[in-house]
Amino acid sequence: MSDHVELCSYIHAHEDVVKAVSEQMPEEELLYDLAELFKVFGDSTRIKILYALFESELCVCDIAQLLGMTQSAISHQLRVLKQNHLVKYRRDGKTVFYALADEHVRSIINQGMEHVEE
Amino acid sequence: MSDHVELCSYIHAHEDVVKAVSEQMPEEELLYDLAELFKVFGDSTRIKILYALFESELCVCDIAQLLGMTQSAISHQLRVLKQNHLVKYRRDGKTVFYALADEHVRSIINQGMEHVEE
DNA sequence: TATACATATGAACAAATATTCATATAATAG
DNA sequence: CTATTATATGAATATTTGTTCATATGTATA
Image (tube, rainbow over all chains, first blue to last red; front, side, top):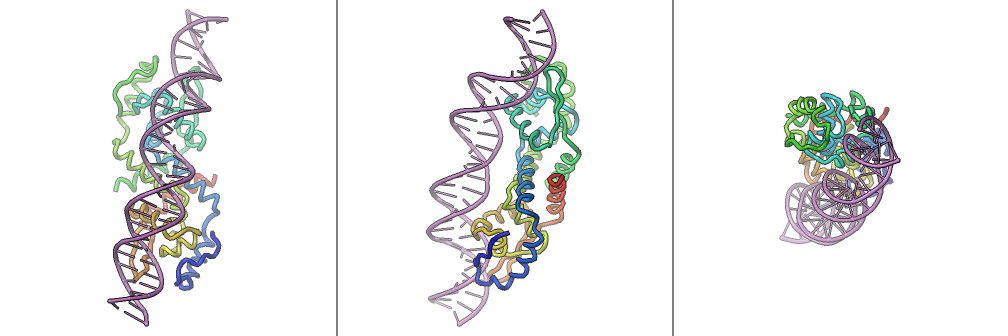
């Protein structure tokens, strides 16, 4: 993952472990994407939106009302969720309904919730 | 979750849905904590540290070397991980070894990775 | 076509945060 | 006790990011 930088004097002691771990690390880009995904879940407004969509598809205005936030703020966050493929949407006249993109979203959140509820 | 704010003119159309969803939403504080948890995973340095610990416990210096970052930067991030109970540590003389706190950490990351790898 | 309504978006601002640098603390060896 | 080594931490800085405000876009209706 990095060039060999001599940071510690005992470097030769754990060198083999570091090397072994290094070889098993996923690619840089994949780890970056993974962090980006979790970053999307790492905002309470977005978590609330996703949780709301657990129950039912909702339009932007419904969500804004539900969370007591402006339409604009919700729309901005829905864009983030959309770009990261966590929600899908359908248009019905003037109204746009958002829904969870897939069941992965639900399971990631549930897994996190289990850890928090302990 | 919020007071009744009249944002949209069709508010009465989806009112019952909003109400139903609202009743099923977890508590504000729980959702906040959940977002905070994901926020911790939402940084590529921290993800790399956690992934490295998948294989073996490692000392601060090992991790710094592995990621090609300064000891200070790693130590700061380990503090965040420690505070959020994602890693545990043991002291052996001058060296401090870090390890994953529990298997939840691994499964949350794996679940996220599945979504990213699609 | 003109108006109203639902949503989207760009710019600006404020708040949060990751890294660096300098330094402090903890532990061992001599 | 002193020097050395491993880690932790506080302050400062630069970057990222969430919300607001104003406004644009898209759709239906009169």
